[in-house]
Amino acid sequence: MAVKKKSAKEVAKPKMENPAAQPQVISGTKVKVRNPLMVVVFGFITLGIYWLYWFYETRKELYGLIKKQGNVVVDTILLFVPLVNLWVLYKYSLDIEELSKGKQNKWVILLLWIVLFPIAQYMIQEEINKHA
Image (tube, rainbow, N blue to C red; front, side):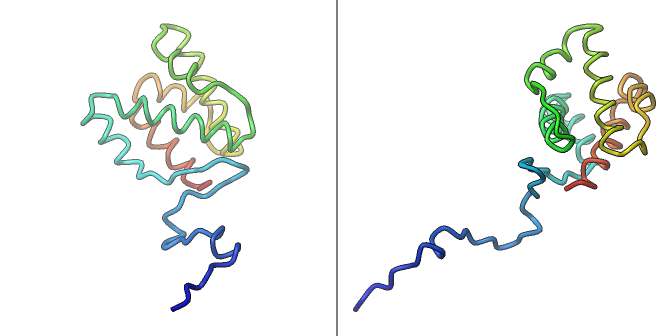
């Protein structure tokens, strides 16, 4: 009984069972669709740990989507430094405004980050999902 050899195309081509479930690659950036409500819920359940992870991941995606360079790790660490964290959130808000082509106002996003950050996360995640 002879074993059939696979061609190079068959070996190199990965099988995708559900292409809709795979993150879409936009200019080298994988954008994951997340349920905005679950981002908020998971943040409360994990006492804020998920929110830090979410910030890190969405910041990385945001840099890729707007073709901007930045250090995601430094941005995340600077969230713990008083006053500097406001600058980080302002820059994040600017990038969300750029991504939305002006539909989201940077000042509204920044104010929500400071006062009601779960609402800001919900709005930001909805905007990022539009680009996934």
